[in-house]
Image (spheres, rainbow, N blue to C red):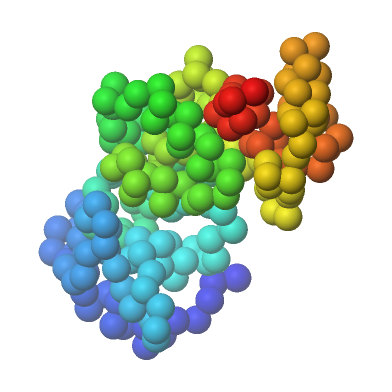
Length: 212
């Protein structure tokens, strides 16, 4: 069911240039990052293209993106917008050449990106830190790109409330590495010792406890 926006709609569309009915309807007010329109509702800032979609078609499903078929960030024309999953948005960006080349990233950068994601840092924060697109960060974290490089993929279970490596004994660290060398999956090791998957990965790859 389409939500009721009335006064908001009137204010919203007053900031849109519809002078060319056959092309994009361009946002003429405040812009957010990468040229997307920004609109204030009360104390909240929202993306203009997302609000346009919602006012026209109804609520946006949780976790979904609103993508542009026209590939024009300030466009808010409803029939130029479509819903997509993060993966669909990423592939759409790649197809249109909007994903920054990863050639300037090093293997260490990729490992650090995946480590940060494993500990819960949001993709948007990772993208800002490494000066890459959010979709690019998502591709790295999920292993859709740089798949030949190791490291944990995705946000890993056991991150919240897991024991820190400081609570592990030398014997336990040795046992963790011994179990990993026999082929036991990191997830099973993490469950056995009550630590996060990421912690196991760092111990096994000697990014922590290097002196052992």
